[in-house]
Length: 491
Ligand code: BG6
Image 1 (cartoon, rainbow, N blue to C red):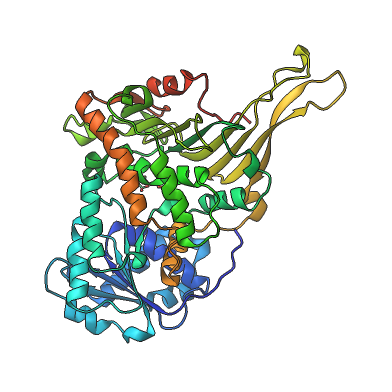
Image 2: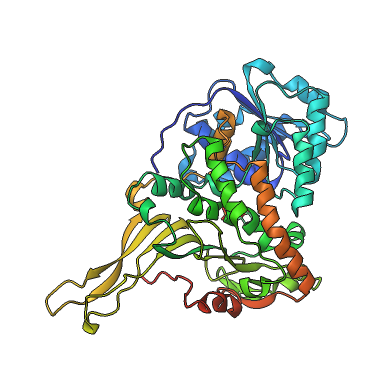
């Protein structure tokens, strides 16, 4: 995709958990791409921190291997990689103790010359101790910010404890809570689609929209993250953050500007307007599933319970019918679903418009299907607007449902930048628009907690589904009871 590159001011990025999976797989490749694009300039540096002793040279070698592994060969050359590796350094620090902080301080440059970003790619239990260490050793400067990754708590109470601990050291406007979905090109495009076109907004309400579907489906299982995932489950892992953020972008009122608080104020109102799901309606409005053996991502796979080996009742799939109690959306269901080991990897938002009020065409013309706007987030990013047309040719009036189809790859070509590239540069720039504010995280948990409680109180096991399918049949029933159906692209 074409992108304009505006260099950011010189920075020092200190990555706690710098030798972990996220750092090697996402952060370093993203920073490399930004360096290669000329966005990182001057003496900016990236300093990896973790507990184990390691020389600068050993870390640089590991980083080089990560770049070679995770950045396609066509997107790197030896000189570019060397240039990036020169920006790297390593310090061993015990985040929860005293060791290594003085060495880290000595390694950092002149505090006033650089923006200082602390990235906490570590277990959330360490967020508090690391922030205290930063404060105790006077490492935060006027230009400091901290970035934290999910999971931010496992319910409202624990999320508040995490946010209190970080908030005791950093001001809210210097805390960047990453939801990497907000950095995806197509997710940002949702805002362009809604607010840079006059076409959709007048129709964007319950008078013209029948329902909305949001699907984030994965074909992979829990990979190497079973330890974390089994304590989380699909509702906490995907719905509390990514899917609710997507729902907010679809449903929010037009913000007055792209200013961070203008956007986040509107998202917050949506979260607060979600109709509660609790013991009284959880059975009707939610389905939780767990993958059984089957075939997925090209091969035979085992059941989740077998992989975990503890008779786990954690859900690997969830579908929900959510409603937003406000003037714009009253009576418009938002069907949400996400899961692991599903039929394919696809994330999309479907806005299903109301049918026409009256057809002037006879039965021979065929049925008149309702318009649909399909925003494909990944893969094959693009937008399809399904409309009715006349089937070309003589022989009377026959109607056909076809998509006006805009594929980003075809329209713009080029590389689709990873979400972390955008988000990391936004942190350096000090632009928190695409990051979650504390009250958003709290509001999301306030809606999710009663669902978790209701499931716990009911005590039944998640419904099994064969790996490689679209989840338990109850998920189909959830939407079909309402006379609707999950969207499948048949074009
Ligand atoms: C993460 C979840 O936040 O998002 C993972 O913890 C999930 O379980 C991942 O696989 C999906 O991200 P993406 O960008 O691959 O859709």
